[in-house]
Length: 327
Image (cartoon, rainbow, N blue to C red):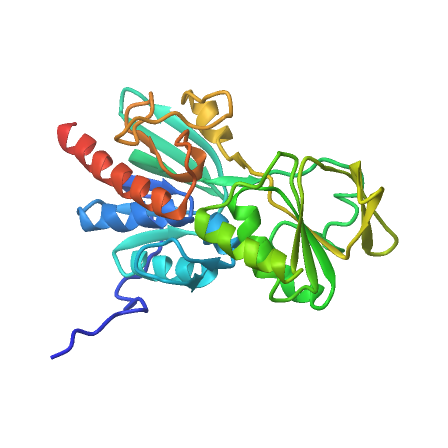
């Protein structure tokens, strides 16, 4: 008999948080690392509370994902949904809130998490808060946000159908979104402040093909210094001339120049950060604070990928379990 593949949670559990209970682990963040940590922690028998405001994190803002094992090509939001469904198929309590504060009682060896109007206690923490998008910080960026300027090409691609658009950035994420935009836009410019773009080889090949078709044009060694328009943005001002002009007329700009780790709560607790404000972890996802683990884009692991975040989440869950057993 052929084995049935389960894509949806079986809803065996209520998933309601219990403020009167001391949890074995609280996972903070509902990106891929948080889902993986909660799922694996529950498999190990820990009582888990998963707290996060927006499901999916960075992956939820991604178009096509073609480097996640098991899926030749899948929409980022769909992959997030599958990860969430898998996690919530276990006995995991869930709270949709923003965490305001984390405190640590060293004598009791427990953490208290304040979220919403309630406080929750736990013996361990898995900190998987991810990172927020980095902005250009140029005139017009805030003014035209939602009126041509955005940070999620997948979310707003239909708004530039048949128009000319641009991507700011030269890393793999920027290039992937430029490729996605060509399915909607008449043409896409990639504006990169370095000598060349730095995508994965597979995406470099796709870009080369799209350049030949005049669907993508790359502007290297240049940067945006201002965004202009009336009710809607209609042009960029570049730092250097391009084809003899500093003005570039476009109708949509999507910014992919990196992320800023959401590490403030960890810093306030005394967790060590590096110069980039990323949480410093070892190979076991441990921090300098006993019982406090971290995973995903908030950490100092250089390569930021969904599959890496998932692996770190699982690692953090296992070593949180190991820590509890030793305690």
